[in-house]
Length: 257
Image 1 (cartoon, rainbow, N blue to C red):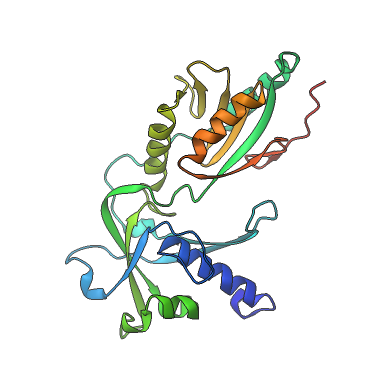
Image 2 (tube, rainbow, N blue to C red):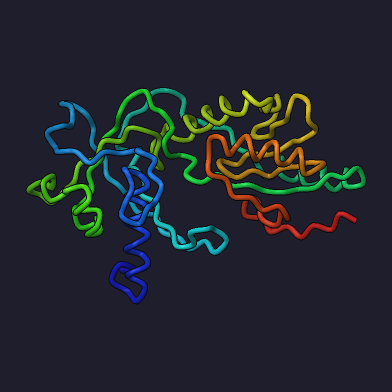
């Protein structure tokens, strides 16, 4: 409906950006994650499950790209036998961190938030997964760039090999979390034992909650805050809210005095 509505140019471009982000880029210059390859049906190994894709749409005015399309894998059609559970901060821990910031405001404590872009994408996987998507769901520029007309099946599908973590995969969250933990441990940041999603530094007083890809951060000076953000920027594209007004669906109005 959106692709046929009054804002169809916007949504068509955003859809192209999403395909380009997942594959090897598009004509709009979107940054590629090389998460998927478009393949011929014959390239799917015998006996492998092939799932579907869904398109999740949203409008997030606070994001750098407010119109959003996320192509999500139908994970229910794929088997994954290992534990796919991933730790994520809960409301109680968020309240603890917020109240702790207020309690230590006289010591200089402040709160900020950060968001990791494409957190589930490009995380290494042990093996490939496969899905098929109707040819009609590909914008013209993507069809031309990847020569999809030569890969479309008689039933009108494009087959896709998923090489790295992607939204909807059962293992995506735990793979992304393990990668985050591996990356941050190099710089002294580790989960706090006995909590679900709270972290600390081995020397700095910085503490933060991680809720999937959203960080709520308690810090005491700009140097400490920059240390964490710069560490994250080594591995991810990061957006920050230094005023700490938005975290985990909450809108916060800070009054440290």
